[in-house]
Amino acid sequence: MDALVSSLPAVVEIVTKPYFFPTLTLTILLIFYLLQQKKWAYLKSYVKLPPFDRGLPFVGHAIGFGKHPLQYADQMYQKYGPVYTLEVLGKRLTFLVGPEAQEPFFAGTDLEMDQDEPYSFAVPLFGPGVVYDVPLEVRQQQLKFLRAALRSEIMKTYVSPIIFEAKNYFNKWGNSGVVVLRDELARLIILTASRALMGDDVRERLSGQVAELFQSLDEGLTTITMFWRDAPIPAHRRRDAARIEMCNLFSKIIEERRANPDIKHEDALQSFMEQKYKDGRKMSNSELAGMMIAMLFAGQHTSSVTSSWTGLFLLNHPEHLKRVLAEQEENRKKYGEDLTYEALKDMPFLHACLLEALRLHPPIIFLMRKLMVDKEICGYTVPKGDTLFTSPALSGRKSPNWSNPDKYDPDRWLAPREEDKAVKFGFIGFGGGRHVCLGEQFGYLQVKTIWATLFRNFTFEMVDPFPEPDYSALVVGPKACRVRFTRK
Ligand code: HEM
Image: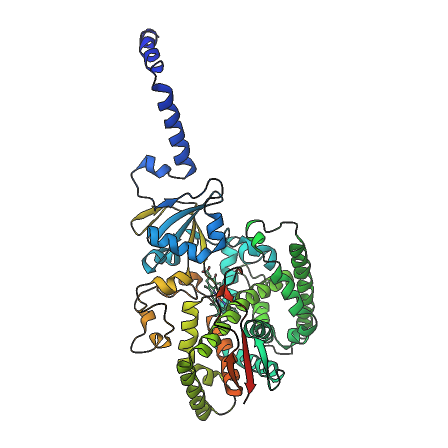
């Protein structure tokens, strides 16, 4: 007590010094700032955080990033390098550009790299109890069910429904006309995917209902949804009503199938109906419907956008189109007039053209994860809680494996160049690691069926100039561009 009393004059002397209160205020502000920025690690040890750009007060980089997301992320990459953090509406977004920075994103476990939070906007679309609305352990089992429904052995059975729908669709085009390719192919893909994945019984009801319901679901995915998934707006109300109706429709079909077990079905719906969770339980009708919607969604815009760019690039590059047409002629001679699984697999140049379109204009421009642990990336410590972004679009142009990256050059995919094989995670158009796209093979079959059918039956010419990507959409496709077709 005596010691305390005797030290009092010294304390009073310090406190009354003119620099005391400014210093104290600055120290408190610094601690507050570090805590807010989750830079607490700085106080524990001298870790190196990625370059951080706070942007404007309150909004951070929301305006620039919201307006031109890809261009903005690219500018920041030029400024800061492969790992950098931007503040957007109070959130820390850490961008990883190039194979070395992307590697931990794809190699990390689900416990380290969480998908739930960044993709939670999809929950009202797919419905409760599936994919991003369930604990990790359940999601992993559901992904296993998806993998089974899209496994390579079952893929063969999907070919004839895809071909059937494509032929049917293009037969209705007439002898000549002008179409917006992007819109036509989007309409076709919902038909091909539905017949192949959901079977004839769903497809037969499609013309009346499913396509319309899918459209309402699709329109329910707006920019607002990304921030407030249940905002009370008309688009969300229509989305919710459409999902309930879609569930009812699927329930009817599921019940019919259960009541007629002798009728054989080889499609994804049937595959889902037969799967069991580890505890022996089968999926409920609502889960089955949710899984079907999730699968349709994952494959719809991705495949239609890739189909559109594949064709548009070829129409814009007659020298490559000539080679595709010659390959089709060869293929016809070898396999006959009708397309088959084997014939579709044997179109290496068309395949390279598809991949090159996907490299230059991938439909999914950003992949996201929430980081659940502090992670060393390219010599930086990225703190737990950051939302990580990788970009198939930036990777397609910035990875060092691509020679002359802005050039449309399908040969880069073929031997002897095979530039995609030069580095791991250089090409991430289908993602990578444990969450690599499960529908890659299905996507190839769709795109190649469409263009093999079109090139065998029609000639084309561009009406509008080669389009820019439309970054206002969540899945980025070409802006509307008309082409003229003439039946051969
Ligand atoms: C050209 C067409 C396609 C492209 C470019 C594409 C692209 C992608 C990408 C980039 C991912 C990774 C997402 C992430 O890591 O966050 C992904 C995942 C996925 N894709 Fe695709 N996709 C295509 C077609 C399809 C199709 C046709 C289906 C189904 C019929 C499908 C089903 C899936 C599923 C289920 C996942 C989630 C895998 C997981 O989380 O483990 N995709 N896709």
